[in-house]
Length: 199
Image 1 (tube, helix red, strand yellow):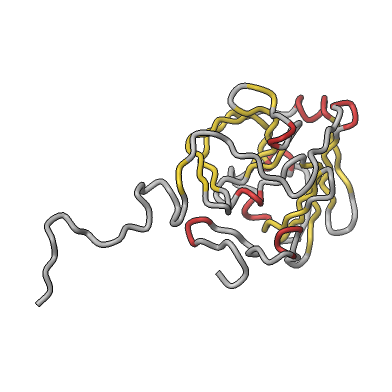
Image 2: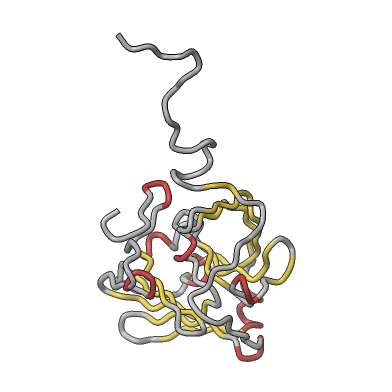
């Protein structure tokens, strides 16, 4: 017969129910990048959606900021195991950018200044799930955190939220981006601990 001490409930996957498995809470905002930080002047910034036929729809900085803006508060989770809860942003919903885009593709490749890429299924960008953000915590987004604008896809690990974002390319099939080529998971769901290939 085994003895169970009072109060022992077994190992918990997380000390908080709002943290995905294996994550720890941080109050600061760690800076992690795959390369040097691009410095993109606002008069040279643009964002382009390219459909599977090669048709491009683009916005410059002024046009982008003239679109409907949203304030949103989300939790973010990095594959390196930190999580930051209740982060506040302002930007343009991907739904807004896709309002006049016609495509039958199910997959995308997100591109950033500096050559960074990451793959995200289109359904994970639409229906209020993702934004191109230019403001963090009430201030213009700092270049180290992806300014002037970055993608924010809070329900996936944060490497999917491409810094210095400048476009989305529609793809008929899923293809790996920068970190996916290096062995990271093709999808990256933090609640399922999809950090690496095979997870």
